Image 1 (cartoon, rainbow, N blue to C red):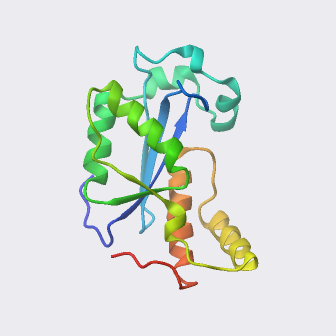
Image 2 (cartoon, one colour; image 1 turned 180 degrees about the horizontal axis):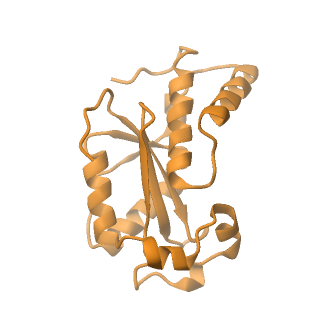
Image 3 (cartoon, one colour; image 1 turned 120 degrees about the vertical axis):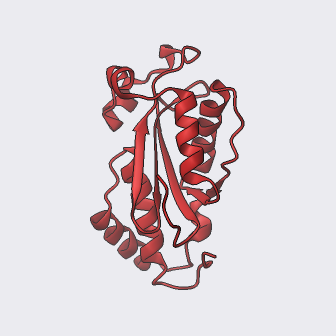
Length: 174
């Protein structure tokens, strides 16, 4: 989606088949500071083993293998969409190691190299007291609740960033 960029920050989240060294991405979502978000399901690549499907993860995110087969896009199209949407943005994740791993798995299976570099979301957060953090989290949960779905979780990060900017003391977006 082509869009004017009021800022150059984006927030990303992946849902996955589980939490292990051979797990793979099943959904990716992103959001911008203005609260616009998008996501899509990713169909399993032939190289990804269903042995890495964790029923506990499915109960958490509610995404079934059938949903991926019926509604998911292939890895190549997923890479195209991500690159187009996030090109030129500073992309932040609250779990950059895991999300970076699944981003790499996605691009690797498509035979590509990602230009998207994930940054740690905590770098955007200002210094604040425990009470301020609790208040901020409660406000963000009301504005954009986390649901263990990629777009909703990325929108939650965007809301946290937007609300935290009112506390001051953190790095400013350029």
